[in-house]
Length: 143
Image 1 (cartoon, rainbow, N blue to C red):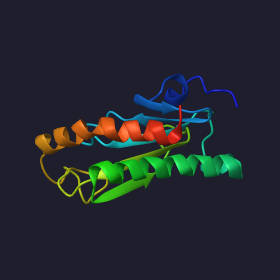
Image 2 (cartoon, rainbow, N blue to C red):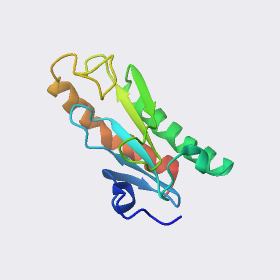
Image 3 (cartoon, rainbow, N blue to C red):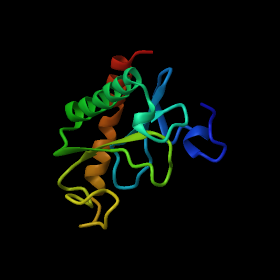
């Protein structure tokens, strides 16, 4: 399927590239207050998960699971949030977000109003562990 000319996920990676496969990529999003916010982005411009065939859906979800497992292993978050919305960018991508009970929005979604001030020191401590998360992803996903 041809890339949409006005789609930001067709035109650029959409964040800090962690891993690129033949059909999708893993990026670390630049979301203030949420240092362990990743996206699994399908390369082709498709809007819905059901646009993929069964094998591609399985492949996509396996990568989502790999991101979730790496975050859980290295960061021990209280919860992993998974979402595929596409309301702002109608290009198939999964959000994989490590959530902590100290984050500014917990227990509300990251897109809701903040519940408290950001814990800058704790965010920095999480960022320090991201290289290990990303090394594990590259090792497990190959290349």
